[in-house]
Amino acid sequence: MGYYILFMTFIFGYYFLSSPEFKPALVSSFKWILPIALSTSVIYIVWFMIAFPKENSIQDIIFYAVKTVNCWSWILVIFYLGNLYLTFSNNFLKYTSEASMPFYVLHQPIIVAVGYFIYELSWPISIKAFVLITTSFILIMLLYHFVIRNVKLLRSLFGLKG
Image (cartoon, rainbow, N blue to C red):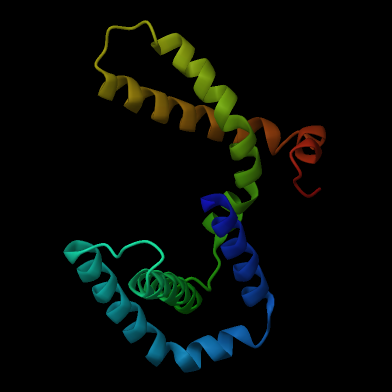
């Protein structure tokens, strides 16, 4: 059931953000959205801590309505803050945006390969995790920067422009 809810949230988010009327409506109604998000958070947490309602009761319906309004309110708050603070571009963002698909494709085989070599070592798990994460990240970025970006066939295979 949870995946269906996440999928519907994704669909609604795509629909809302692709609408030209959404951002102005969000900006004009933010003065109501944040107090609703905060107050429903308090209501939800207090209600959850005191007593969970019986299933299929009026309180249960109200409880889940409060939870739903709370979730949507916080999603709208995040959209508003993203629109306010994350509407810029720079060279780092352009580079990492282009690197995201190759990074996504390469991360699993690289992590498995590096993990294969450090698995038998008698290091503490925290050191193994640190070495795995840093080595994998460095290898993926080196492969992307020096190989994938410079070979036209690989650029095409990884979905990069020209």
